[in-house]
Image (cartoon, rainbow, N blue to C red; front, side):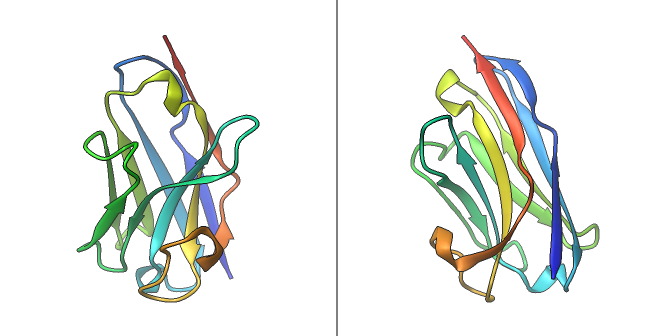
Length: 124
């Protein structure tokens, strides 16, 4: 089992920045591909970003590419999401997740552990 706890959400004006953190405990963090997802009211949960086990490979949704950066610190068992140039369309609950197998994590169903989520609200 792995436990994930997100933090860093909040209210920010359009154009601002936030950094989300996800602290992991349980099974060996450094073996997990990690991902960030988000879910806005009335919408399905959507993929935001993915990072592989050693942090050497990242992948982003087109909607956040160039504005968001995913990173990880395996010594601290933490994955981050730096969000810049935020706009109201980024308003959502943001979730971190651990993929079931190393090298996986390309689609939502490949993630088997989820955090409780942190709210991000961007005002115009």
